[in-house]
Every structure is written in C-alpha cells, then in structure tokens.
Image 1 (spheres, rainbow, N blue to C red):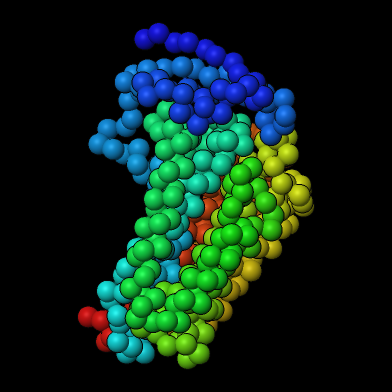
Image 2 (cartoon, helix red, strand yellow; image 1 turned 60 degrees about the horizontal axis):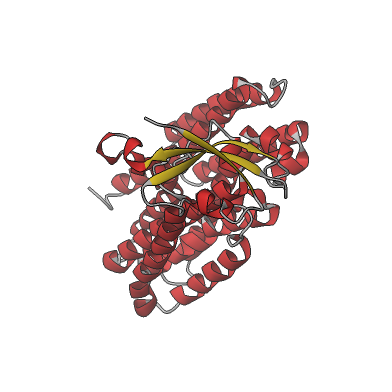
Length: 365
C-alpha cells in the first residue's frame, strides 16, 4: 500500500477541501500531525490513502462509534421516567405520538453529536486528542463533509418525527420553539463544537433536561400544569444535571490539551485544581438529589441499596479526584471513567426503583 504525505497551510485554497474530504472520491486524507491548532498559522500533515484500503470494523460496528449510540441514554433516561410517571397515575398513554416524538429526540441528539464531531474536526480538537473515543473522521471511515450532511439529515428527520405530536398536542409547539431558540444560541458555530463555549453548556442542561422531559410528557398525552407535569420538570432537571456533569467530566479528562489549544469551557476556565472542587460539589449535589427522590416514598431496602451504591462511587471517585497529581497520565482517565460509570449507575438504579414501584402497585404486570 503506497502512502503519500502532504503538509498544507491553513491559508492555502485546497486546505479546506482536504480537511473536509471533498478533494477526491477515491482518496482519503488522514490528518497525522497538526501544528498551531486553532491559530492562523495552522499546519496539518495529511496521510493520503486509497479509500479501498481503509477497512472499517466488521459488520458495520463502526456505526456505533459514528452515531455515538452510548450517548443515547441521555434521551432514554427521561423517556423511561416520563412513561413511568404517567403510568403511575393511570394516565392513558398516547403511544404513537409519544414514540414518534421519542425517536425524533433520539434523531436530534444524533444530529448534534454528528455536527459536534464535524466541528471538533475542523477546529482541531480530534486531531489533538489521540485517545479520543470517536475519531471516525481521523480513521478515514467517513469524511467531515459526510458527517456534516448526515447531521443535517438526522436534524430534519427529528423535526419531522415531532410533527404528529405537534398536530395532536398544540402545547408541544412551545417545546419546539424552546428547542429552536436554545439550539440557535447554543449549538450553532462555525468555529468549534458544543463543549468549548461556556454559555452553551446551559444548552445541554435544558435540551437534555426540562425541555426534553416536558416535550415527552406532552407527546405521551400528559396535560400541562398538573402534578405529573411538574414531576416531569423535576425529573428533567435532574436528568439535565446528570448530562451536564457527564459533559464536564469529559472536559476535565482533556483539560490540558484544551487549555493549550485555547479551547474555553467551564473546566478549562477554572483550571485543574479548582475544577476538582467544582466536580466534587457537582457530584455531591447529584447524590443528594437522588437520595431526596428515594426518601419521597420508597421502601427502606431500596433506599439503603441506593445509598450504599452511591457511597461506593462517591468514595472511589472523590478519592481518585483529589489524589490526582497532574492532568497528565492514565490516572485522570481512570478517575473520569469512574465518574462516568457512577453517573450512569445513578440513572439505572433510579429507573429500576421506579419500575419496581409500578409492579408493586399492579400498574404493570
């Protein structure tokens, strides 16, 4: 296999074509080295390969990475809680409109993930992080141009899937308007992705939190300004905080490179040491919130089980966090992995508890 290397300056006309992958249909340009990322004097060295020589994983497994299926739990969690919340009061579920709206939410999240990967590639983030989990563009599986087009496709699909709910429940229109406004403010940029603008981190909280939960509540037949609606808002607030914590943990794991490349987010703004306290307090709030939910009418054994699991992850995460000597090395990755696993576990144990309540009261069998 013949390998050709080509170094291009950002000011050259063909630089953008190689970065987007539109320079050829038979060749792929794989960035192997980047200098002065996020600066005017940006130099990128590309490895030019034949498209036929790039073999993706067997049985299309690379699509799991491209679409970031693991992140869909951020929608699955409020979806699950919304259904349980309505079933617990004997609410008649509108399965068709609710399911279509949920699929629309999944599609919109995929669109955001794809567009952020596209922006991260253009800004140089994924070229700076050799240990990034995605890097599907850098591996040559897809081009940046294809990633951008697919993000538009899934965004349009998500909007269309929400139309039945809008027709049946006009109040969904307020949710759609909120999504559009937040999306325009927080998700659009030609410079960099969602994780590198402090103010847009609030977009993650609202879009994966109260806005998503209220939209799902309406789509499944729930009425506005009822106790179940306010419970959906509360559940959504907690879900949004979990998503925001997950985002900040990812930023902390990559704090050194982000700072060197002048990518600004809350964690890089606070710095390595102050962010330890920020993340620790954030985690404690999540645990206390979960314990509060459990205290609001649950059996003692269930509360104690959740408390033990939460304390286990709290001790493990906080101990690793405050013992980190520097942002370099495998220790920070291990610490952040513990936090991600812990936040995922909080979602799962709460969902299981609510599901058990439905069986307990005979709502499902």
